[in-house]
Image (cartoon, rainbow, N blue to C red; front, side, top):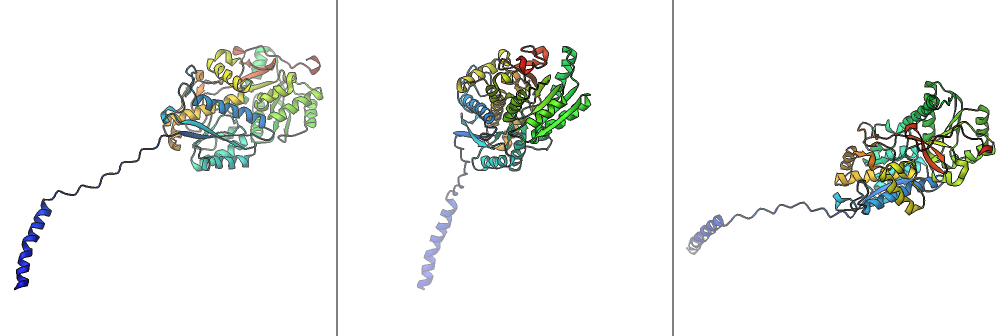
Length: 436
């Protein structure tokens, strides 16, 4: 009886509990998590790989100087400079982040270039690399970029094979040796038709790395197609210490013109040996590299006079392109010398990559790659003798680059071709050593 009475007492309690539960407000759903706001970017790191030690260290220093000046302009404020990122401080679309450059020294060795690229991308965490000057090193370092899916911007390697590999992440600013060599032969043709100075015989002189070999192959092919006789073709080991035998071969062959592809130490050595052997061809046409290095004129002095080289930069360009003159003055104040082709190209490469990162508004590799492909710069924004920067999406090649021929006169690189835009008259043929 007591148990039944206790159960009857529990019934109203249970009923009330059910009613109260039904009337209670529903529990609020869990708050939706908002994505965390990314912390402001303090700095953006890019890599720059050049030969900073070894035989090509003087060239590497020029290249490094160009990169450093570009970073200084990007991180500072230069309101009167008509160039991307010059008027603002840092990268404005990334909270004015500072551009930091991490350098790699590949020592002109392809295997070292590969390991340095790996280090910069994976350990230093750079978002892109500018480099590498030496075509053989650029070939291996850019393979790392392709494997990792990271942007690689090449301002200064000219082997034609670099843009035939079907790479997605490789972009090149400079024209290649196919175009440069075409310019050389067009110069020789104009020399005959406009200056009445006919060239019939040619010698090809090149060092034995990828760059030298690619240049020689193109030069051989074009000489044959255009009816020039190649009377000698000399391939020598890069960074050699003795070239007397090579010069004696040239002297015996007696070509009208020598087409030469040599880096700086070899270029200097050949000129010294030409003088020792009292040998002077009608013309010496260099494929830039050593002939445009600051150390070339500095070391040889007056013996460097009258060498002709293809180029993308000249000192008379400063008179007609205000941005080039302004940047050159900043360079001269910082480093005590004028820019040259090497420093001008590495400078431009750094500006182009940084501009793409800023327009991407991100450090995401694919966003940067897309921005590089959308790059459009006009010639008046550049320190180089180009019409601008615009990349071919099929191979990553800048389609607006071009070349000029310059001659060393009075210790300066002066435009002598195209003849219509010359800064001075061409000296041809080369004066004999005894008449200088």
